[in-house]
Each structure stands twice: as structure tokens, then as C-alpha cells.
Image (cartoon, helix red, strand yellow):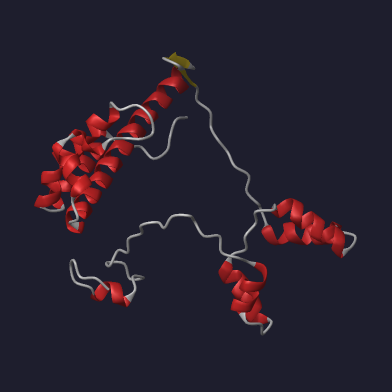
Length: 211
């Protein structure tokens, strides 16, 4: 039976209206962001020209980080609303296809399949079974390599705990067996100062104040 997290039309509208509670600046930017988004959707290819509207041109030239921040937050709200709308439509299409069968719409054929993924029932027993069935250490290592895969990365906290239990410096073990693969470009990340896990220095900064 069709199920799961249902997104109602009311939820979608609430998401769209949410910017109004985030301040006058953001709500004023909503129309500008929607207009710019509309114009960009008409463009072909992966590259886009953000200067197709007066607001977009202002974004391309501004050095005002607060202006960019407001535009970013408004865009994120629009993106969330768009995602909710798509999810709402997907759920209703899925329900229709489940009840009436596969259908072709344009170049797409929609079918309804329940997906699944494999889970380990008892990890401890599974590991014990691998060890028990291995005739020697070499076979055990080869089996673990095949099962874990070449891209396996251990849980760092677990590795540190194991190192500490053997009275070995966790940092030394990390440096011995692991390495950091740096991305070519840095990612922009935000710290929510309302979270209890936010660092003290971030919480103590005032609006537009830099570290």
C-alpha cells in the first residue's frame, strides 16, 4: 500500500510563506529571487547568466556580504519549497501508478516499486562467523578486504577508542593508516549559533562581526 512521509498542499504553502517570519529583508527578496529563478530556468546548458534581471545583476556586483546572505537564505527557502512541491507531486503520481499501473508521460515511464536495502541482522555474529570460517590470518585479511571494500573508512571515534584501549596515541594511528583527501575547492559551511554544539567563539560574535 502506498505510504510514507506525506507532504500535503498545506505543508507546501507553509514552506513558501515561511520567509515572512524571517524578516522584512528576506520577504522583500522573495519576489526578486522567484523572478530570477524563472529567468534562469529558460537558459540552456549548465552555465547560467545571473545578470538576466536587475536583481541578479546587483548580486553579481555587490560586495555587501549581508545582501548576499539574505539572498542565500531566501534562495534556500525557495529551494525547500520547490523540493516539497516535487515531493508532493511524486507522492500523488506514485499513488496513481500503484493503483492504475505504469504510465508514459513524455519521455518518461513511471513505475511503482518498493525499494529495499540489505541490513546486517547481528554484526557481532557476522564478524565472528567470518573469523571462524577463515583458516588463517591471510585468508581472514583477504575476506575482510573483499567484504569491506577498498573504499572502507573506519569510524574515527571507534578507531580512537581502540587505540586508547591499547595505550596507543590515537593521532599517531590516524596518521599511520589514514590520510586526508582535500577537495580542490573549499566549501562554504554555516554554524548555527543556536545549537548547543556551536563553538563558543561563534556564539560570541555579533551580527556582521568577524573573527
